[in-house]
Length: 116
Length: 147
Ligand SMILES: Nc1ncnc2c1ncn2[C@@H]1O[C@H](COP(=O)(O)OP(=O)(O)O)[C@@H](O)[C@H]1O
Ligand SMILES: [Mg+2]
Image (cartoon, rainbow over all chains, first blue to last red; front, top):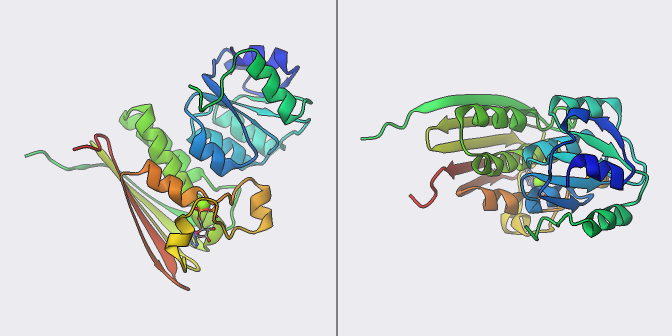
């Protein structure tokens, strides 16, 4: 599944990194705990989160996360979007809450990070 | 005999409480490691451990110096801070233990996994801490850990 397909499934808006939507995550992680993300995600994953501060982008950078999806209508500020653009990390935003977002992607075959 | 020559040295300052720049140093390290040409999986564990150490200075200390030496087959990192020190190291290493205040937790940090993750990601970890003075974290990463 590509980020572009994720965008369709979650009816998401692209906030940054439109040119990277062909990326294909190998798994996904849904979390609002950045230490958990650092400890338990695998490389090449996509992150679903309700956090929108710049450290989310940093955490993604350090963990080789290839895209971030902000859930339940949350949007980061300009600085955070700019940082993601610099770090080449695409940002999507969906109005769906965390559970529904994860569930829809999982139903379409996107595995969790502990399953790959 | 094989030479053990430093390829790149980085020394940067970390400022406590500066959440805007927090991660700059580890991000720079990631770039350098990629340029040196280490495999991504190696870079990932070095950078994650570096970032946890950098964040601990930003969150828990006042300021620190982050120093890295990159060799052909290993990376050495020292993060030396001025701060409150860690009164009970064994407790601090327990997963889930954190003294981070609420505003840090709101940012998504303070889950208490940092030290244990640094241990997991590195091949050698040493912490020297003095109450009321500061904490020094030393980590080594070997390209071929079994050697
Ligand atoms: N550099 C440091 N200076 C002072 N205290 C620290 C430092 N690093 C860690 N600690 C203490 O150890 C605890 C556990 O650290 P860690 O496992 O990284 O979890 P977290 O940072 O999420 O609290 C911290 O909550 C803090 O009390
Ligand atoms: Mg920590």
